[in-house]
Every structure is written in structure tokens, then in C-alpha cells.
Image 1 (cartoon, rainbow, N blue to C red):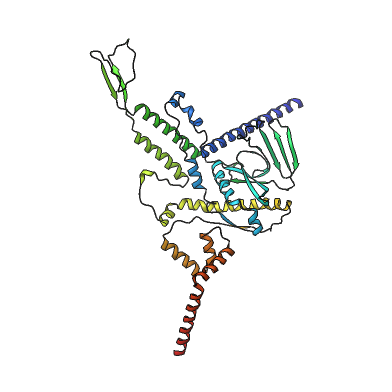
Image 2: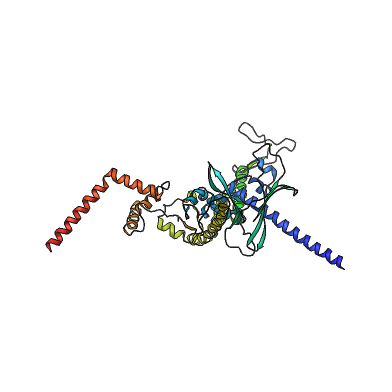
Length: 445
């Protein structure tokens, strides 16, 4: 009885393991598909099953990449960067962070959930952090939302023709790193000493019923439908642009020949030759395709404008009203990515401590918001109002339009410009005249 019970438990355990393994493989396949559509890599393999192989000899598969455009448009948190309030040392350590986080946000939007490894390295002799996104992986979980370990395949280095080894994997947890091959043989193992898992997991939205979040499958699906429809349209144009030729009453023993300007068709008495005009309407196909693209755009709070639509360029306030739903999404995403930034800082601080660098406990971040276009007059009026009400300094305004300058460099540059332009003398003269006018006014009283 005990042996039978153990056998049942083993069967159940094996069944659960097989189900989870199948789910993991299916997710990896889906992630690979999303990445291919974003990068435009080998898209034809996803539509070739919908056509006969001979048809691709007539026209190549159409490859329209709307996935990249939509994902980049949706990813607006790091479009103009962020200001992290720590210290100058941290600014030097994270010199690559804004550029890397822009890519991390886009991949999170695309895949749904990604892991980003934080790496401490030397860059031209100076220490810095690097950020390496991992797109598909397996995790061990402390609870439904907290990973304790991660396993993922290492890049196969396809560009290196001398690299012909098997697929290799990496395992990380809070204390050790293991490098092993696809057969489970350990190639390298050591204690990394960080005391934390050196990865941060980002999700495109809050998790619902599992750790991983669904990616942009709707956008990818619309892209697939677009490529199928456009390939069909190209085939239709190829076969039916000049109509379908047919004959009746011809010699049955004579071979059929293709038409051409240099060929004469010999018809017997009573024979007939004609061309049938195709009944399809390519314009209706294009309109249906535009509807599909607009629908998936609206579902993601985006709007699209096709080249032939024309129209005047809308003003900044009109764009803001039209973009209201997406602006609300942006405000929600700010809170989500602010929490991720704190997660990144916790891991960065532990890694920095291990490498003998002390970072403060306090961390703050201010995301730079995307500004809608203004006229030159409106921009000047807004800048003057900000300066007049002490909402901004001339140095901060200078940095806004010259991002390569620090505040100290901007202040120095402004003083230099004042001396060169004689602005200080003009200000002193103006102040003196105002003082004399006030004295005369007081004397008259």
C-alpha cells in the first residue's frame, strides 16, 4: 500500500513538472516571437504556413514592422531621462543608466516581464554600473511575487565562427553563481558575495495571478495580420493586375503558350480569347487593414495617422487633449517605475558596498516629463513667468536647453556671457537710475 501511494505521488509530481516545463517552453517561444517582430528578424517564418510554398516564388513575404513603432511610442517614461538625487559619485557610477533604462522599459513593454542584471565593471579605468536585460528565464520564488533565484541561457555568440560549443546556462541566487551546460555539468561556480540577487524584475503592469505578465501579444498579432494581408495583396496584384486571360474553342492538340507582344495567337474559326477583370478591390483591402491597425492603437491609447490622410499639424494643447488617455497611463506608470528605480538602487548599493564604495541610504528620483510643442512666443512667456516667480533659475533654464552642462558650468557660462555682453554694467546703470528716481519721488513728497 505504501509503495502504491509513493508511486502515485511520483506520478503526480512528474505530471506537474512536465506541465510547468511545457509552459516554460511555450513562453520562451512566445518571447522569441515578440523579439523577432520588434527587431524585424526572419518575420517570413511566421507567415509562411499560411501560404503555399510556390507562392513565395511569385512575391516575397511582406515585412511591415509596426511593433517597434508602437512599443517605442508607448515607452515614454525614459524618453527624456530622469534626475536621480544621490550624489556626484553615484552620477559617475550610473553614467550609462538613462540609455540602458530606455531599452529596459521598451523590452518590458514588449515582453511583459524581464529581468535586468546589474553589473559592476571598469569603464576606461573608472568604475561604473552596467545593465543587461534578460528576456526569457526561469525563477525560483520565495512567494508569488519575490524571486529567490534565476536561471537563463547564455548568449551563444553566433557571430563568433570559432564558438561551436553547446548551449550554456547561468544560475544566480543571493549568494552563489553557477555556470553549467545543457546537460547539467557545472563549468564554473563561486560565491559572488553581494548578499542579494543582482537582478531587478520589471513588469509592464501590476501582476494579477502569476509572477510573469503578458507581453504585447495584441500588437504582435496585429503585425502578423498586417503582413499576411499585405502579402495577399501583393499576390493579388501580381496575378490579377492585368486580368485573367482565357480561351475557348482552341485546338486541343496544340500546346498552350504564354502571351506576349512578340507572339501571335492562332485561333480556329469560332474560337474566343478574352481577359476577365478581377472582382477584388485593393482599396477596400487597404481600408480594412487600416481599421485593424487603428483598433489595436486605440486599445493601447495611441492614435495613428497615415501618410495619405493629410491635415494640418495640431497645436500643443490639441495634442494634449487628444493624448489625454495615454497621459493618464503615463501618470500611472510613473509610480510603477519609481518603485523599480528604488529596487535598482537597493541592489546597486549592495554591489557598491561589496566593491568598497559607500552610497547614502537616501535615494530620490524626478522623471523628466515630455513637453508638448509650444510656439516660440508661448515658450518665451512661460520661461519669463517661471523666472519671475522664482520657479527656476537662469542656470537651470540654461541646462534645460544645453543638457551637456552641469548647473555649476551653466552658472559660470552665464557670468562669462554677462561680462562679454556688458549686461552687468547695463543692470548696474538701470538700478542706479531707478534709485535716483525713487529718491526724487521721496523728496517731492
